[in-house]
Image (cartoon, rainbow, N blue to C red; front, side, top):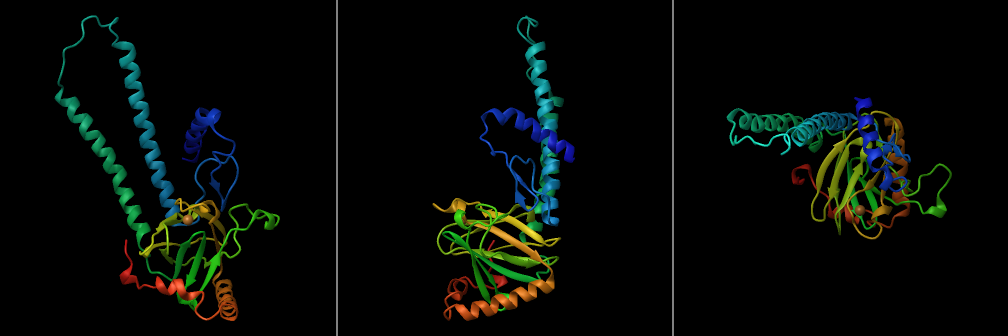
Length: 291
Ligand SMILES: [Cu+2]
């Protein structure tokens, strides 16, 4: 399957390369993007694995359909020209054919729809959530709240070019990462105070809008410790490209230590209520969560 995907990607690249800008095809790989990579970012959890499986299934179906239609067109263009058929057929109906070209596409759509709906429902609700993180999109930074771990919140902003340290990624690394424990089901509740943003981390198979006046649920888990990069992928204003997301997955012990330390730091330097103001405004219970 991997070979098939790469062949399709290579074919697309050959067709499009002459008009593509350098780096246009840079796709995500590992936890971060690298120039000129092709295909989807490797899966870091079950959600992403299911997304890749559905993608592969649809890719096979559209490739076979395109080849089939292409061959038919080639036959029509060569075999049924006016020159080779001076007296054209007057056939206007063929019951068998009409049934076939109605039923076969329906079967194909059902074959695509069943796993597609199963995936949508799997992504939608957290199975047995272990902790909740509130994700608030601002113009233009992210705020992550940890209501189950002391109620503190942190703000996450991109690192300016002049402040980047060796190894840090431009427009992807941030000052404060979202820290999560590995192997846990993490419920994400998104919201926003002003415009629509989108919380998108490719390798974790998660993407949800952050919409003013609404709290929307999604979830993810992370198989292995590591750093996973994402970005706001809803155009949200002039600094839309400057609101990356970094999810840092650590062991449970490390996560506990981090929450204790961050909670103390937040209590020490934040004026009372300052950090909590927005999160309080979007506080909700699971029952109030809207789709
Ligand atoms: Cu945004």
